[in-house]
Amino acid sequence: MADPLRQHIEKIVPLTDAEFASVASLFTTKKLRKHQFLVQEGETVAHECYVLKGCLRAYHLDNAGKEHILQFAMEDWWITDFQAYFQQTPATVYVDCLQDCELLCLTLENREKLCAEMHKMEHFFRMKLTAGFVALQQRVLSSLNSTIQQRYEQLLASYPQLFQRVPKQLIAAYLGVSRETLSRLAK
Image 1 (cartoon, rainbow, N blue to C red):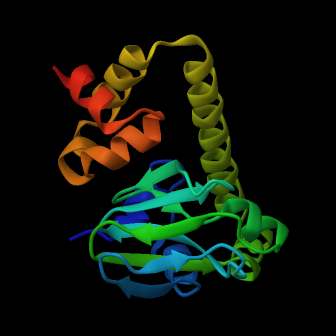
Image 2 (image 1 turned 180 degrees about the vertical axis):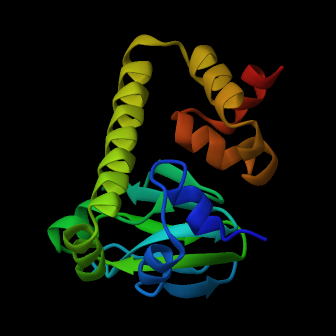
């Protein structure tokens, strides 16, 4: 069976066995149970994580205690508090497990080492960041220009498996609507 991380990377850049061994050696494995935190607000963020198994969410609590979900992450996705990770500042979001999870974790130091020593990996990470930025821009524009019904349908069409794995109240929070509104949209 092929390694999921290798398959993920090779969607963008090919790697020799020796190159992949070098890349894989810089990751650590972390297993977390449902409801455990990967990141908590105010903490130092040591890793970005590639999801091997499970589902997580990244969210922010505003001053009124309202939860704003920024991201979900399932298998083959990356998650962390990216601002805190890249800028080495305290976390401003929480990341917790919606299911038992197995993650591959990469420190910023090891990421920088990979990029400096292996042009292929620098290209890989640049392409992943670009795709993430484009997706974020699309989400912001969608929230500005689309109805809630259109945003719901777009999310369902893009990530149908999310609706099987994430409680409806969290889908509602991600879309910025109440659970009741989400129920009406689903009908």
